[in-house]
Image (tube, rainbow, N blue to C red; front, side, top):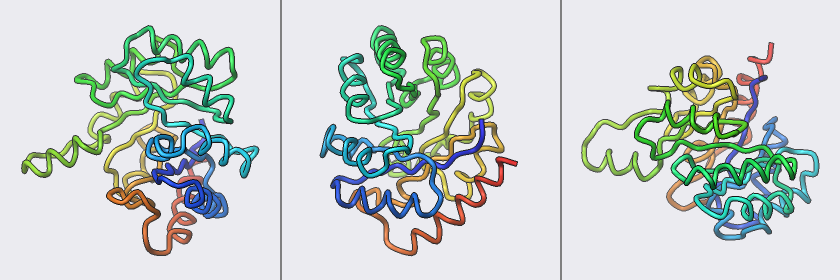
Length: 229
């Protein structure tokens, strides 16, 4: 798979999400993600607004589904999402229902290993249950809690090569990566580069970060897209 850049819109208002998405698309970003905060705040309307503005762009709905798999996938598919996210920690039947809905509704399923004790095994289970992508994820609260306790904070890069080797589907790495680390994830075999908090979003206020975001995004996209060869 060619290296792509996905921006996570982890903000809580539709106007700001659209503004950030426009800037991102102008900068060369390939995929848009309706982040969990946006979905919680605006629901289907957030995804529907992104689809109306960007009719041809892949849109990931980061639902983090734990139950009601069919209904959640169906709702986001009807709103215009092309990808939905289900958690590995959900019951296997929930994952199966999201996958079944995805197959019938033409939506790709991304399985997230956040919170799994064995993230490599979790990634393999997600693939075995039919997920089209694996998200290798170290959570925001987990990272903050470890830092507050003065303990070492794991990075998604620590086991990324092992996760990539364990599955045949494309992998993306998420959670506390610096800009440079995110850009380099294709070198680990993970071609889906995700940009979000704190790279382009202020993680504490869930607003667009300050600074020349467009210039930074352009540079990131140029470097990531160079992997396309």
